[in-house]
Each structure stands twice: as C-alpha cells, then as structure tokens.
Image (cartoon, rainbow, N blue to C red; front, side, top):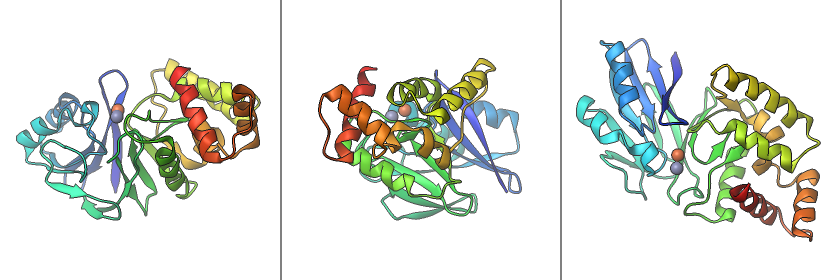
Length: 257
Ligand code: ZN
Ligand code: FE
C-alpha cells in the first residue's frame, strides 16, 4: 500500500511524496526545493528517499534534486530530451519504471515544455502530470504550440474517469475563476468554485482532482463543447474551424485573464 502526501513548496508548488510504509522508503515528484523533503525525512528518521521523479526542467520542479540526491543517493528519473540535474535514467514515451514496487508508465506530453513527461500508475489510476493538466486549467505554453498541448491533454483525458490528477501547483481557484468566465452557465463549475473556495479558506489543498471532474469543469478539456465554442466565437467575432483553434483561443485568453 502506497500513501501519497503533498509537501508544499514555494508559494503554490506541491511536491508529491509517495510512501511505502512496509519498506520505510519514499519517492518524490518534482522537488523544486530540497527543504520540505529534508524536513519530512528528519521527522521520519528511519525512512529513506529512494527515488526522485521529474516531469520537466523548470527550476520550481528540479531545484532540490542535486541536494537530495547528494544527501540520500536517490535515483533520479527525468525526461530524456531536457536538461535535468543529476538524472540517472532518461525516460521516453512508453517507458515503464518500477518505483517503490509500483509500475509507472511514462507519457510524453509536450506543450508547457517540449520534453515534459507525465507518470501514470495503471492499477491505482494515479496521474502525476506536473505542469501539463492542472485542476480546472493547463500549463502555460513556454515552449510548445497550442496544438501540441491540446494533443497532450487529449491523451491524458482518454484515461479512466476515476484517474486521480496529481498536478504540481495549487492554481485551482484562479483557474475556476477563468472557467466561470468561459462557461457562466455551467453548474458544475459554479459548484466546484464554491467547494474549492471553502477548502482554500480553510487552508486545505484542492488536489488531487479526478478526470471525471476535469472533463466537466476544465475549459481546456472542453473545447468541443457548444457552450465553449460559442463563447470563443462571440469573443473572436467569428466561428473557429477546429477544436484545436478553440483550444488555442482559450489558452491565449487565459494568458491575459
Ligand atoms: Zn513548469
Ligand atoms: Fe511549475
């Protein structure tokens, strides 16, 4: 049995910590800062850090890698096509790795960065997707094109309904503010906004999300919906030909929102 805990880092990052209680070992995903992981390990003196998984090269995801690897000897996995400090194993699409006795599949999901990868656990339906799919949103396009991000999200959206989305930032409330602007008549979005607002007021995390909830409330998974297409058409003053174009218009709107 693996338990997942969120360690907060910086202002809105989460470092996901996977715990294997039987062997007293942990793995972390995207430790942008070593300190929260070091603090956890100090508190749990007889546990070891065995693996470090990286989704992409941005510093808020890799900043703590070298320190943690130096301290613990943990094995570092990261995307093959990006510069990842201390990487021991370079991963490409379709790779399967074993972490804490858990099989993880590697998906290449370009868009936020060109080499961005996600990790999927096919039995538990856990998805660690970094800055690709966010709760009610998606990552900014720093390197990829809207088409690449759209295809990456479509691929993630094809996973089962009960897939749990472990993304790397607490952006849910501001994403839902945008989602409400895109679909003012969407009751699921309104309900989720109320829920997340209450959670955040209480200092609670809004993650993980589920793919079912994302399909109902995340505008970036809803570019084919009539309500979304109509809103974009009215803003652009013309009907866009493809779902990809609607997606691109949504992303551009969110960048200025
Ligand atoms: Zn990033
Ligand atoms: Fe990030």
